[in-house]
Image (cartoon, rainbow, N blue to C red; front, side):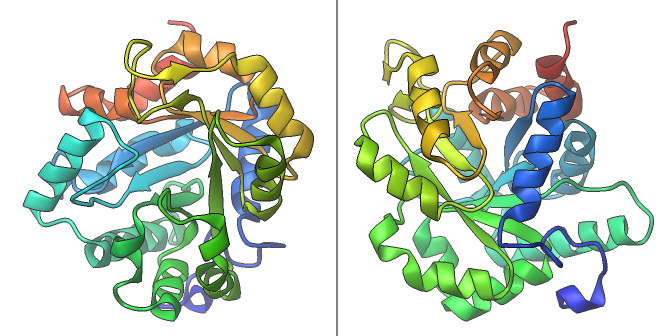
Length: 279
């Protein structure tokens, strides 16, 4: 299936790769807070994925879906364990593309609308079938962008070019230790949004486990140089975090706290709605 065969896909007809992501984040921000929830594909079960996406869709500016990998270096214990469970369940990139294609077809046929879908994963998972094939399969499944934490900017030109030919964006990350000049260069190359890592550590890290930054000055410095929205992630767990960071960020990414809640049987949509509104 190609983009031409299904109307309404997030990356079909966008002005530029990742444009649908930026538009969705800005639109959500005008209504209040823009939250990008993260889930692990195949966790807690393979069958859970469609329901999780449908549950999150009404509350999410975009949805970030993690592609399970055996050594997720940027992720803390919660997402590491979820990734291991998903792999044991049989989750794979090919399976994920099939699931997303079905969800996009459902939406295009009058089902619930989906926000932009972003896949987060590690380079080895994405490139095994070749760059052109990856880009074509991602676009056909309605994927709006990829996040690849272990792909340095200097080595990303080939993959970016392949993705851009099919309208898929490549989201870049900066951290508290990224020098200002490099942060500006990364921001200029980012599609959809700039991912502002809020701790010098892994996802889900607490204050005792990672070096945290004063968020206001850090986020404002990134917004001053970024042509795309700036979204804060890593260590975002509560509504208080969302409110605090949204003063300076365009959006927030919530991962480990949501994955933990899902593992405990909490409804994903209810969890994210609680981040957006006072209980």
